[in-house]
View (cartoon, rainbow, N blue to C red):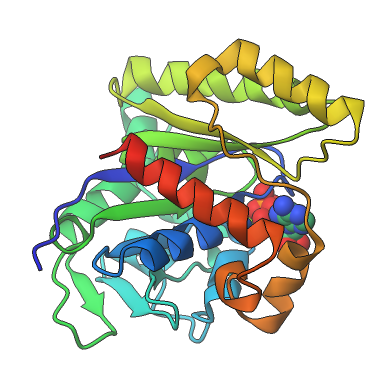
Length: 275
Ligand code: ADP
Ligand code: MG
């Protein structure tokens, strides 16, 4: 089957612990579950490498996105048990600034923001699957980038490489404050380097419909982002927090729990929006 890249989606929120990594894992797994023909790649840009651990691709210090970005080596692509493909992250990403082109001038700084995009476009895949993968632009339908909880260099690289962003928002008091910083950054990226950067969607995560706070945050997020907010809401669900320690995505760990249902519904909504 021919694969044609539809979209590169950066999953971003400058706050940690809002469900970015869980969303990348569960949405990608859910999409493959709904359509086995889809080829989906996830890229772990967070130095914490949680996504790599979840997908079980954290096995050596060479084949990761850091080396692909800094040493112009191939983009290492692994295939995971559930049919999703993954590019491992690296703890060395913490210090990537020192290893990228850069300098005091604006021109040089901007160069350091487009390293990920150039790497994905220009470097061939280092194919760990034996399937003959050549370049991520030719071999995948969707790419999701899991970002660290900041608005610095790595996230800027993701925003320059992406067509759109998906923003998980947790129903809590400071949620909107952080979002205005994120939206300022998006405006700057649009003005300078990636004018067509779109908002794919805003996702309410860890939602607890019994608390007024969750409901209030949901209302405010909808007032601000309108129809960009997915109608699927991810509930706070203990099975979602257990799944990682069993090394499985929620859709395989307990297909019948509310968390799995929600992520399958999100996968469906995502695919319908992009149909
Ligand atoms: P982030 O990537 O934004 O830092 P994570 O996806 O790692 O956030 O989620 C933070 C923690 O919350 C993880 O331990 C994860 O397993 C757990 N978690 C994520 N989503 C849910 C949810 N809907 N309900 C309960 N726990 C969740
Ligand atoms: Mg994370």
